[in-house]
Length: 103
Image 1: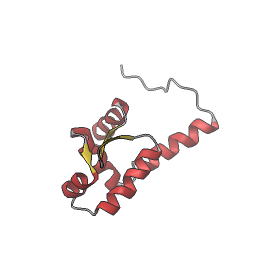
Image 2: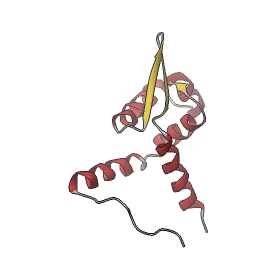
Image 3: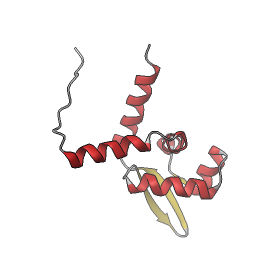
Image 4: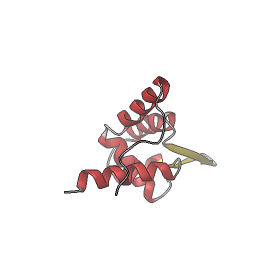
């Protein structure tokens, strides 16, 4: 039998942080960015090329994703590479995809 309850207590602060997290997933561009970063670490230009978007638009969305700790970055000379912050992000994406594609 599948688990149907939540194991963590929810206080007001946690509730608002969770709501902020789910708001992030309300934007298809952010989901697309997270998806390409789940495949490999990329710089802004590579993400922009893959998604046919401007560097400026990608940079803006990456700032939002960094702010809520969904992506991390590392610097290599002048280039900054982005990747998913941890395995939880891929798990959230996979669970969401499983939910919306189940019949």
